[in-house]
Length: 310
Image 1 (cartoon, rainbow, N blue to C red):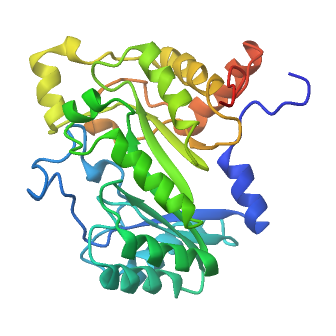
Image 2 (image 1 turned 90 degrees about the vertical axis):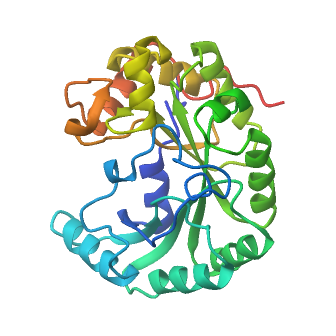
Image 3 (image 1 turned 30 degrees about the vertical axis):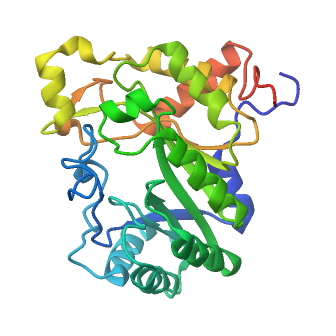
């Protein structure tokens, strides 16, 4: 590999931006989603249970400031000296008019230990007013706008009840990028009906978009979700990857991915008692990352090895 870095990791990149450790703190501003409240659909995405990734301090019943204070208290025990990014994570965090969004975003930015925002949303829930607001904030603060793409296949997006298509993702990303907004994207590897070849193809497709940061994670079947019901009725509906198989799949994926894209994560952790499958015996994110790094070296490969800019 000579001097080629095995992959473009987020932790190194974010530390370079601020010359110190930076921690995201999740906040719940009380939003919903258009595929939950009947605007576009009901029930939400078939795999979704926000409780599986929302920390205890994160609750829409508390103010943004209170959630940030509790989150900082939690993390500062381990890392007393660091800065924080307010992560608007739960549900769709641009699903309101721009005046309401401006109030919430500014409340977070007014916290003395918060140096920026990460705003998680859907590509069909941004308009010109919202993008202009985020663009203006990004001129004064560190801001990333995270779009849930999940898949580049419209067939898959329909199956998982996203209620938007990949063209929506492309249009939103191009529009936001043109306004100077730093774009993060989210993909799930292993969605129902997708072969390994289709999953790896996603990397090539999204590499053609102005995405700066990518978050990957394995499909998890969570109790009390629509996906859990579908899996119970037909276990062959989903391919269940072992940890070893997923590590190889993730590496196959990033070999095709533009080396300019920063990888923020490879996996997601949910409470073990909530997970039906896959069963990875409690492996933590950092353990999976360590295995991915080791396997990359063993395979003499790296992010973008087979990437060719069009």
